[in-house]
Image 1 (cartoon, one colour):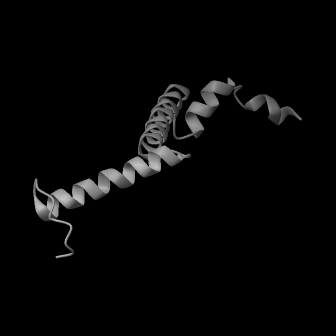
Image 2 (cartoon, one colour; image 1 turned 180 degrees about the vertical axis):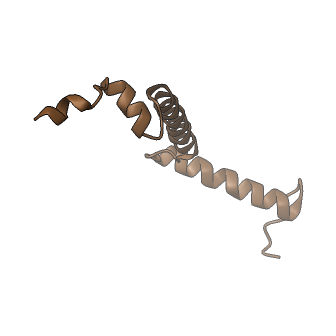
Length: 85
């Protein structure tokens, strides 16, 4: 068993720096940038999300606004007479 003493002893961090593609500091930076990117993505999704609950008042208010907008786009500032024409 004399051949065991022929090899150098390695510190674990030095060995991993030699073998793995990234050193510990680079890996930490990569993880941090991924975390920041993921948080931005989640925040963007939350901003684009519609409200989970639509209340009756909110629903009718939205419908009224849509009808008013359609009437304005079709007839301008004056509503037509109610004669069915």
